[in-house]
Length: 230
Image (tube, rainbow, N blue to C red; front, side, top):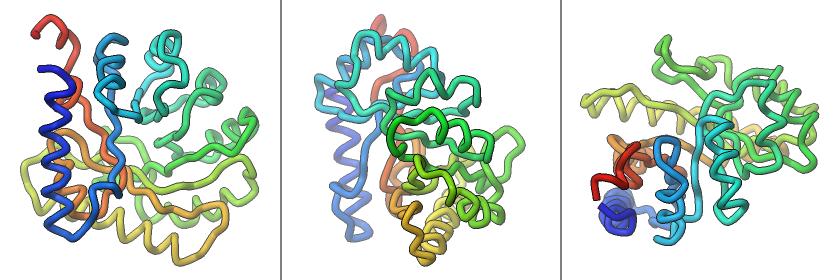
């Protein structure tokens, strides 16, 4: 299907989820995750009116940057190796995967301006996932005070791949509660207003639990080879 058609469908679901909990759809940023699709498909997303694109590898982001430049707002959503910070630091609007001091040091050193970061939290504590355990997040964020080029805009998590709605809700609710705890400290370098959570299979539940950013790949832009299917 065309991205524009998928977008209509997803916007309807965003609106319905927001309506359930008395939120405005304007509170939810839709990030099109283009990591598995071509630059042409990413262009189609832009033409459809999507502003935010997400990539999880520096190679993928740089390849699309060659053609798209700064037309989209780029979100780096994958694990970021310290040595690769220099490749993407001047191209991204947000980094969703800050999870260690060594990475903060490199971002701070390489940044020519204040960089919007989200701290990645492994709420489900699955070994296959990156991020901090919830109990370490507050101290980690307090330790980021010296890094003047980093603004902690919020938290990010990846929920378990499950059909268990209550398990998903608990994951998203925990992240929201953690965000509120951090906001209560009133840290000038950590406004922590954003919650990046929810993907193609669970974004409606994430919105109901407070998501302000949802990362949609398959349901919006498809997978590799989607162009050939149309």
